[in-house]
Length: 478
Image 1 (cartoon, one colour):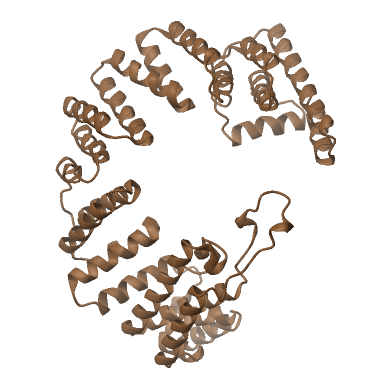
Image 2: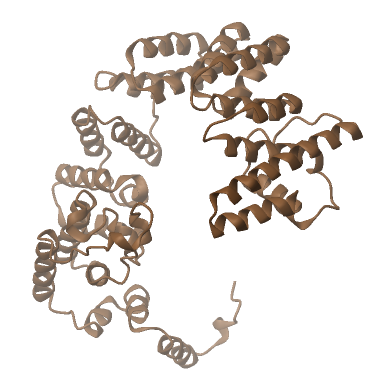
């Protein structure tokens, strides 16, 4: 769509228009525009970097000095009252950030000029240097240097893969190098490797070799597995998850979870269950055990084996205490018609449990189910350093239950209700709605006011100016 009617402009008018627009760009913006849309060669000449041999030597020296610690920036930890937080320091204006940004952009210009021997070598050095810095904060002062470079990383990696493809003639070496690069920088820049590396045979060989080499690192193994799946899809090949995932089980039993997913995708529930049970006997990682159990519940529900599903869902929730798992177990209890038994079980379990988050979990259940009187009783009887958090949660729950759907309320109350909805506070924002009599509403609001007063007193006792402000806020809500 020609929004500005450019098609009807003469060549001379367009040239003049582009020239005026370029005059308004900064020098760096102009170079990037010329490099990408007009002439990469002209951009290099304007940047005074047309001598590739000098440019390569500059980059070599810079990377050596970086790794030797010349550009390390030490922060003054004493300027922070609390424990040092690296993210509070901005390296964007550091000398090393400016040099990295300049060199990377120049390397892209060389790539667009099809001088792939230069662009490949320079990008390889610069990215290797950044990768080293990610593992050693003493090189640059941060372990996340890429976050401080104002650059289009998708563009960088795309041009690097293009340079690699044109520089390395050995297809096996190309695939190996491409996969190694992908591993080093994670799956953030997957499009680059998918768009530029075409040798699926050698890519699969490299992925399989790396999965074998990374036997002690499941996240990388599984990311490589997912990368292989994407390559199959790109080339329109059938990815038999059952067969391919099983071929990796010898390197890590966690792949049994993917084998089971293959069976689930084919609705082969019985085989999926057998595979998942085998996985539970083999795997040790708690997160994987949770994933396997979730799949088991799915399979049992699909076969209408709700008792088996309930036992696993209940066990998962008691061990992990998340709201998501509570809702899952509750849903199956509803299907079985044992809601009263389920709720009694939950209350008894968490009242007698000594886990650090037992009271928090119990409050969330009471809030969700509408057992507000029990919620109030638990909070007022609680003590210890977490009591203030219990008061905050219960106050929000009570106010949201009574006033959550009201329109004519004070701005402070409206702000509190909006914060609950924006933050999606579990057990409150999704609470079950039960009709409340006027006297019940008054009782809940009276309890909420008492809780707000106690919270205000807590901050007053702290005797700090910021705490006084918070106390004033709680009193204004009350």
